[in-house]
Image 1 (cartoon, helix red, strand yellow):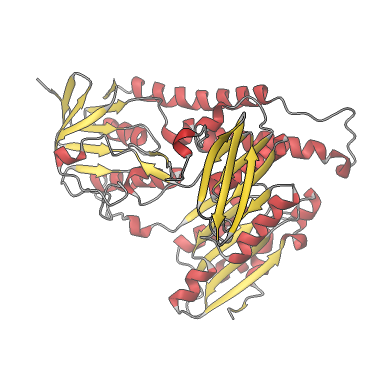
Image 2 (cartoon, helix red, strand yellow; image 1 turned 90 degrees about the vertical axis):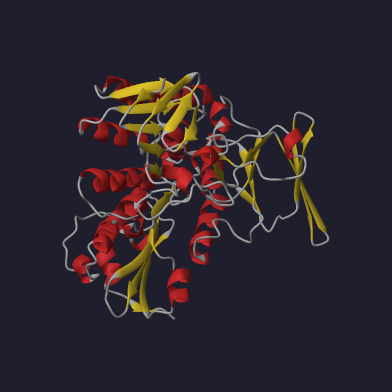
Length: 459
């Protein structure tokens, strides 16, 4: 006989545990199913461990530049990857343990360990056990995509997850994919001392961004010795000695690269292929993402999908916002919607890129009249003082309403400074709200009113 609950949460990424705790605190009896490590991608193979590695890479770079700041370090600067990995594992593990203890310690939450599969719209099997509830919430996340590159199946390669197992610096790391994951790992391992080549089939890295952002990011990485092979379509890979070979044969030309390690970072796929969705009638799209409405409900009443598996956001912060939307609508009488969410994300190379709202290309395609303001980081006092003047600020404004449409801040503190613009955008306030505010000196944020005070028509 199935054990009965008020709600079942499958998966413990960013949305699941918070929702389970909120439902439990509201007096509901909640079951939580987790087949592996608690915390999902962010805690185990995403944000937390990678940003810990970024921090170590930043210190390695800064140590090598110490003389620029008048600080003399005697001896050779070296990186002990075993200690770097140990630090990263400890930070990730502490967070993972915290999530598990939170769930197991909640009085109204019962944790089930094992792979969960739907056996109907209200029934979930976990191993030999069966549980039921009128409400089921799917937070099963995603994993690295294995693209159909000839030779890949027979060639040792790393993903964003398995690269975290490295306790040595690769001699030559070849990264296939010049988007966020590939750029971050490429940059950090270059700073650890590896030779790095990033291979991308598009004409420029992070092609979803504006060309000026892509170009600046490329220049930042190239200045530190990262090599790019762009427009590299028709790839093939193979084992070569103790390493790998990546070959591109297109347009009559041939390019061969040999490296010690291969990292494939070309996208993600949802963990929905062994979830039993068909048994419940839950619809997915052609890529396996669960179809949801603006309140995260699936095609079956009583089943919701949150986080990366719903295709409505691939970030930790969007997954958490999914939880907030569902909880508010179910428990608070809210009418919150995914459509209210403003795009916001970061690229955590160094310096980082903070991005909110529309790109310049999107603004142009919209056909609206717009204003733009820019400023190089060489003219930002905080950047000059820190000796980190790479990048720029760009802000786009609707010429008629005065509302901020989007912004790119590529530079020191850009991932933090961009939030002052994001808050104004959510308030639907005009950009003059920022220009009339008094900001702290010396910061990056204090230059945002200056940029907005120098707006010009978008040509």
